Length: 193
Ligand SMILES: [Fe+2]
Picture 1: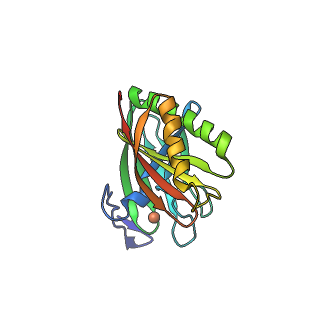
Picture 2 (picture 1 turned 180 degrees about the horizontal axis):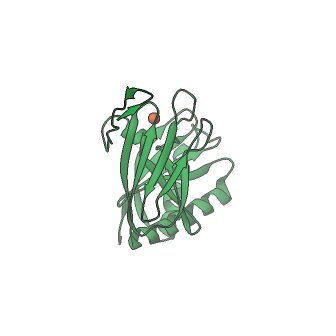
Picture 3 (picture 1 turned 90 degrees about the vertical axis):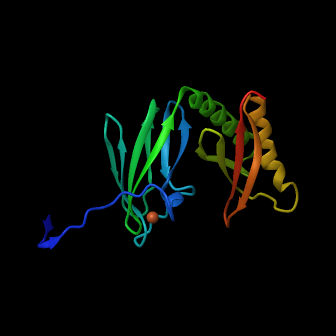
């Protein structure tokens, strides 16, 4: 196949490997919809490196085309079952990811969303929580704000865990990753404890 007289190379979808996490969608609930945003922290959207488009592969096919400066995300009605997302990055090519939504997860999403609202009501703007990823047994939360790093730094993350517990979702804090402007905290979710 030619374009402007030059042969076109097929794009090969990657599903894992180096840079996969930078392109895998983070999901979180927003009322009755779900937001899928590219990257564990939002993918950069500069001229040099950005997401060109994403496609949600469901019976209703959805395509979003982005420009540098846009937020690389899409908001959907909460899907049932599995969906696929295809993402084209101008630097690292085409990716394909599977995202699962189950009834059990739906309940989990509801609790997590309530916990985030509750945490932000009392802690923001000093500390603000945002869900980056929910999988079967892991929850990844980004904390931003002027978190005091010397006094009670871990209390914020423990506090969030206790809010989840009060709502009936038990978890264990397993990882704290400090970045320049935020802290990413991973919780292992447990059932029925
Ligand atoms: Fe990229």
